[in-house]
Length: 518
Image 1 (cartoon, one colour):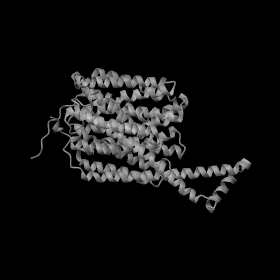
Image 2 (image 1 turned 30 degrees about the vertical axis):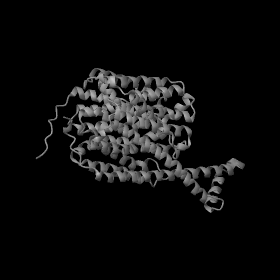
Image 3 (image 1 turned 135 degrees about the horizontal axis):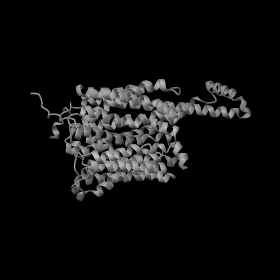
Image 4 (image 1 turned 90 degrees about the vertical axis):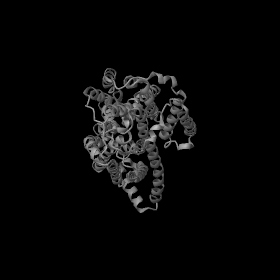
């Protein structure tokens, strides 16, 4: 006997308009993770910051946001979606304006941390709202939130490059103010999905919140700074790693003991949700890791400006935009295991192509890898969203949405840490091997050095030193390119492994009816 699904209610146009405003708020919050990445040197000059200090413009935002994302489930239950989203949108807008007025690196770090913490509440709130108010229409709504969640960090460097090039770095933040005001007003006037439950405040687990903040903050810092500071060889990283383990142990103890835990891990008992989170974590590597790798190559090897990098990377965004409606249709007819498998195979093919990278690659050579990445991201994101959230009961969605988004962000953080570690280690290895080849006994090296010296004859007696310096730079560039190829090979193996892992998944129940939510 064929299973029956509850009738899908008619689409509420008012709620649809409300949801569009909410999605735009989420887009701004995610965009601001990457929007500064291509313009850090301009911000550094404007604030007279050191090279070590300027990285905190991005790190402070990430640490604060990753703490708020799982916390948002409890807060939206206490305050209601209306109050939660309004406060998040208003706070994000105010902090964006303050970031533009910052006159010192200390001010900027504080404002960015508050911007990430307050604005981070919008991201899981949108995911939860989508599956609450569009029950039975997941195939329609999942491509929308999937596109926004993956497109925003992808085009962040592009948008940031254009704004900085055309205006100044201040507009990286000022651009949020007008739409932020509109989103705040729409949230206050139009959201009516649920009611606050202020009684939950009586049992609010403050200790659990403190433990979670220390655990996630320490983890994010260790992952961000570990590759450049030699991991546990650095005293601060070692201290925070120990502190994170202790806080994590205390946090999980509180989760099991508290009457109203700050995060309810019970959602992981749902097989679909647990599997979806695992795949979401690996997809975070594909989303944030590749968004990081391509600009680094284009800047350090090809010498591209932020604007040129943005123009080269824009291909991925276009492919995601055009793939979203196709993925929405395919998810209705294809087994989700097939969708996921195809998505991760696409990732693997794209990264495999780049294993042949040389110092001369530019837009043309990177075109197909970026096309495959854009298409694969949407195939995976739409399927994983439905797999993880599509069959959860409505009362579990707020909390589960925070955990789901946290896994994607943590996957990206872990991926970036591993990528940077492999880049550094493999570059050292390739440098040693190249130095063994490029010696005074190497005819090819001596011929190249002589050619360089001849081309620099106008420098007179300094031509020899300049030629030797140029040859050293060429060797370092080649070692860096070879380390990029190694990273892409490792990512290829990872994505192929995940495509194979889809065979281990039990076919999930159809998400369309949302049957277990009633």
